Image 1 (cartoon, rainbow, N blue to C red):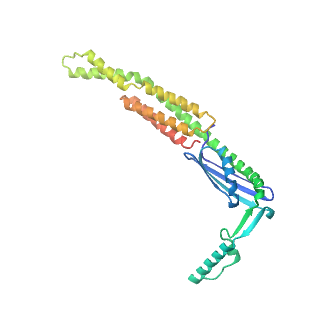
Image 2: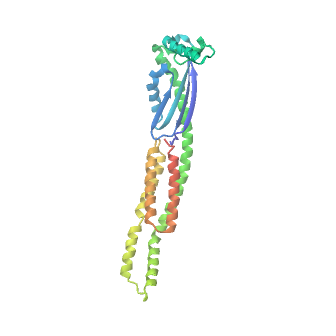
Image 3: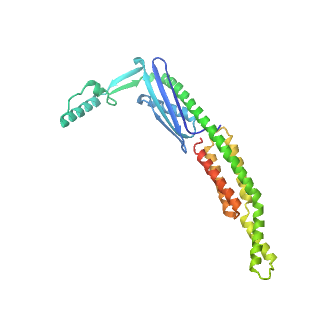
Length: 292
């Protein structure tokens, strides 16, 4: 199933002693880029979280925000960083003396500074904490994946419409291609007759010129390859795996063939069709930048 790389999920839970709030958001990215923000006392669980997320998401920039709520003090230890608090106190006194401001230094003020008071989780409870955290993490992941799948389906439908447009245009080019040599031959004969006073045309030389033109302007191979790329592109859309990078590569090859057809053809109708093909290809390329 095609997935977008854009999504959001939120979930929370608690067991009466401990609770977590998890928010996950993702946007498009060339590779898989995971950033996790969680309480310092849970840093040891980061690798486990990365593995859990990596099993479900293969591409995109993913940001995870985890906050912790502790309802039971028996599962945590509160510590006081005396040296850091002393440093804050000295700085506040220096500010007071330097600027002659009101002295409102208090316990509540100093305790609000970062890392003065720390809440640490007991090491023996990490397995239990991990189980509690994984529940909202997976729930938030599932919500985000549902959103990515819904947007992915819309992208797929839009891309399929554009693919149908390209196939119609390629059919027009294919139908028009045989007439380009005939038209060139007719125009060449007319020009030669206008230049010759006796209207006697060297048929052998004319045939040679037409053959050279036909060889240079033949776009049969490019049409076959472009149609083949279209078949491969549509089959890739149906795969139940991340296909964004592969689709991007196929689109580049489609654009390459369209450019070659455009450069080899001097038929105005074919040129117009190719310009429309390139326009549709560019729209598809923009869409698949957000496919996982």
